[in-house]
Image (cartoon, rainbow, N blue to C red):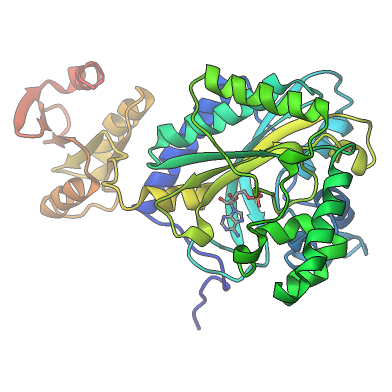
Length: 404
Ligand code: AMP
């Protein structure tokens, strides 16, 4: 009997995993550069956290959660997104005042699998909490943009919108409801069901895309405070030189957004799955999960899709050096260990295969340098591409470190 991964999840091997490693390392660097310390939250939480934090009218909560009862009778859900858990952790920590965190890890949604849409997928993201100023939105949006650009996604487009707040959104929603009621016969069944419950989501419906074009836009209904916030965000993006497109129909799949909403689009990807990330402001989220008021802004980026957008790339060699031993692996061990301790990425053949087989492995590894150990106490040959150097064994470690 043999097993394959369940539907909608995959193993990730070389060469693709080499791109994953590079992209995730770059994430650590960029999030640190913008001052976001790492937070690690549980992969499962109580179901109610997501029902209240993500919104019980969303597809994520109504259709996509991996929910089960644990042996103690608690309802547990594998996290479908990262924000609710991070905000819970923030509230739980009792922190006061501006607070930042970066996370990364797998998320789980029971979706119809297709290219760029998996049941386990990997997100990186940040949350900037207890700050209401538009400066926070600008910083967060810039971080995501610079990172995605730096890892090499071409044709990146930033789309932004404002979703208003508790003052102006209800007025807009009433207008939107009326608009949809008037054209009800042109909408799909799913959209009709949303008119009363959550009309914003209809703007997102792929089937109804043609008829929602004339729907009223939130940005025409913004109250003075939301308008000023939106204008400040746009000015800030101009200041830091981030191009953006205003997309009046941009809404987000999760309920908790207020004011700023944004998406990063990889326009080279298939249109249905071309959002490589998205985020926004969620001033009401902390309260909706039972905490104090703590406005915040954040994003989540889909690493699976970023890697997809990068396409096939020549994998960078992960090794600096491959050591070939003409005698035994045991003779090579002290040298390999010393080189690794010296900071070099080194591999060798542990099983004592023929010298010819070891050279094959050296070539396959892509390591730019091959070290040939003739025997204990003898000189060592170092081959760097077509150059060959004979170095005394005692000097070879320092020699290689200085020639890195
Ligand atoms: P969301 O948490 O829905 O705002 O999604 C943020 C980003 O995560 C999206 O832009 C996608 O890049 C990625 N993402 C969301 N769902 C999936 C999925 N099922 N498979 C792969 N990536 C996903």
